[in-house]
Length: 473
Ligand SMILES: Cc1ncc(COP(=O)(O)O)c(C=O)c1O
Image 1: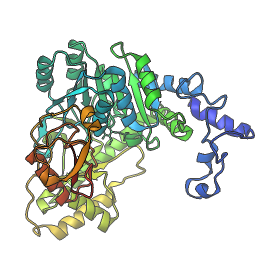
Image 2: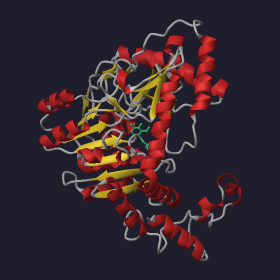
Image 3: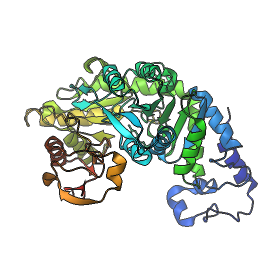
């Protein structure tokens, strides 16, 4: 099976023409090569004949994108070099105009809010379902969307996140039916689901369900280089013409060939071996989950304790609550004392991801560390009560996100910001889910949650000097 862009880059390297073109390193960068190796420079080229042009593809990039569309069952697919963030911005710019209403989950990633700022749409926030056992807000229920569509029959688009960062998936087929029943497109932020299409034990993918635009981060879970993503388009509800225009508008005019080649390579890998690689990852994750659940003091969530929500079994959500550990404590101890870095931690849990990139059984060290920790800490600290970091009231919107973004603003202490209008996104990172969006009235409850998260050690994007928030003047 071919990887057209990779093949073209190898051919150009073998042809070895005198390079009188950018990039300035000319294929060799003595200092950079010590860290990065020779190969990355040798294929880091520009739009010379034979290597095509991402923004007007006619050659190997077009062929590679067509193979990608075929692999995922899309009508057309695009390589992205500015992450899923760029894809979501382009999708919203393609679909929405200033003043259009868009239904979005209140716990959407900040890239969705960024897209809303760019196009000037009015967000109608959907209240996510709170998963009590995990202590966080997750997917959107069918009832919530039905209610919003009834209250806002003029909405122009529905956006959902599926799955969420923790791998929890909602009723995506139901979402497609509701959106299409209302005559509007469904955009799925599938940053955490690029592997779903390649294994039947994983939740259904957005494209299979019939979504109109699906944006995925293969760099997160498949193995392409960081910053690379896929955008898939299907059907006739969204103009592919406008999608192309929007992608050109937001994209760099110098897309990186190593980044794009990594997308071509990973698509080929998944088509050839995706099923068996995922078989191995699923087996390993199941074994780790079962073994962790035998350690007195730790719990690794299974499908059975997630209140009926479907989950991606390659993700391990682990809590040390019974040992008195917050997710932040557990993540920090694993790194400091055992040299293990988890994907991320929140107030309640840590998230560990198992992917097709793991070589051999990776559970031994983690399980050994958890066992040691449990022996040392059992009975030492009081049990932690489940923190509910995202169960905050739906805020009032004083301005649209775009109006607030462009308004003049001042910095005030968080504690003095009650009743003011937020100018910026304020989001614990990861996962990048905003607690404040531009244009929202700042309520006491949100400040309390932010203070609690800061105290527990969360990194908060959008606060200056840790406690100043930008508010509209
Ligand atoms: C749910 C979700 N959507 C979108 C993004 C943005 O993806 P990227 O980092 O590929 O731009 C993220 C990143 O963490 C995410 O978690």
